[in-house]
Image 1 (cartoon, helix red, strand yellow):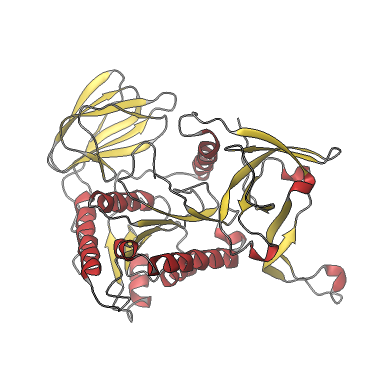
Image 2: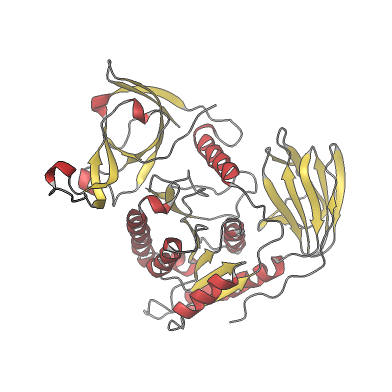
Length: 440
């Protein structure tokens, strides 16, 4: 199957950042790459021609406002004139871009959707649209490519399902979760993915190494839940899904990637910028002719981030959950009694040292539910509110949302917490992980 083609054009030269309204001319098949300044927003509009941002068309003559620090790229197939108003940290035109190869991938996926929709066979494979795994190392553009493929499909009238397995950052909800949501319209370049009752499972940590077994169980649970939904919805089944994965691709991370490919029954694996990973996957999947493994070039606009920058990005995502992208939401501060909630952590020891023979070490039980005492150790933790009605349902249940612990009064036995809205919780069970946030 012929997916994509080579990158085009020649290396671009960066232009100086500036303020005030200025015009930028984009030639055909070129890209304007932008990093908004750290302190102020940037306004941008399409003056002439046609252009898009990560697969979503820019409406003509309408100003779009981008918040500080955001990174994005404007691509034009046929050429365009862009106007910008405000400061940028970086902006430059690139005439060497892999966008055409990405568009070609979309065209192949579109053919698969049309075949699945037209299939009158009861055979599950022929009526199944593309199930696309996007893989690659950290900062290779996986999330961006996922959004492009989703937006292009939505533009054609499909409602593909977006699955996010990247617990380190979180494209659908906060970090520390795996989640899925249907995408019915092209993704807004500023507001992000429109959420309509997303299916969210709380892992509770930002790296799978803390409890890889739990990560695998939750991935399998999410995949099975989507399979049940697809079985009764031929439209969603034909539209398929785009699955974003994490950037850990070696050792345990590689095994978890293979587990995701199996769990979601992926039939297309897109590998961004990693020849070795592509070769390994082709070798291990060579006996599955129904699975295409495709190597794609990563964009030259991808920005490499160190651990500190990634931590800040996680903090911004959590803040956005409670306060909104533009600080336009007003979360509620609530006070409850200790007795109103029951807290659990997933993963513990099978037995205490006192119950073991001398010299024996307690073994880890990665699926064990461990009751958590309410004390000041919970300060600044983000907890998940489970839909479970019984403790034994916690691991297999998705979550309703999250709260942020701002104070614990041990003497009065009260918890003060921040919630995105007022109202009664759907259950009393809260899940504790290691996800922290220092509000400032």
